[in-house]
Length: 337
Image (cartoon, rainbow, N blue to C red):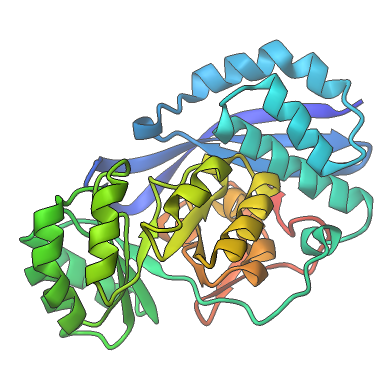
């Protein structure tokens, strides 16, 4: 019988984390552990208000269906995901935590690392970006200087931020990505494109409203900088819709429902010629560890959650030369603490 444990945690950010949708000083999360004999697998689901994710509601659902999970015979992680998908309809964050814990546990039971269990051949690790949230120009520059990094992702909210962007560019030769989280309108984005190009921006993530695919077609046609879908690409049903409106997609395990659907999204995106970035929802080491194993399948990595937090509920994940890795252990390579 599967053992199911969970606990609520709250991790403080190093700096108040502000995007166009609001500010957070703490990241609350639910850490889930699945056990079988001496083996334990771990997953994480973060509280994200603008996606309507409430941890207490998640715990209630988990308690209501806990016995069914305990009785499940874990013989195949992909089948386990389908079981969870029917058990918790549309609860992608909860399913993702359980799915990742299932992969971690199953690989440990088989004495394999997760990427080996999936059948992935490792390639050189990707460099992850470091995200700087919205703040005064002086504060954003201070954060950048405090964290020298080869790739920055800067949050962006309106046309006034172009001056801040220019200030930061004057102090670094690192690659810069920007993420507007839907904050711009089409006219403003079109006006800013020449400035973005002058500043050598590598990519632009979700500049306008996620539902405005027609305008994204126009922006993509007029831009030399690639656009990546984030809010517009939540689950695997969204991948095909993004083909003509974006150059790439950002896949976040919590949003799509875990490792299992992410693998299908990666396969479909490749078939459609879309570039792929793995992203995060400010998870700690537990929720970030799966990205170590999937990074070999994608083009870019945004896996800086543990870097932005002062606290962690996991151990075993580390950064070296801005690349993400885990300890040489079976499963995901991490443990809850």
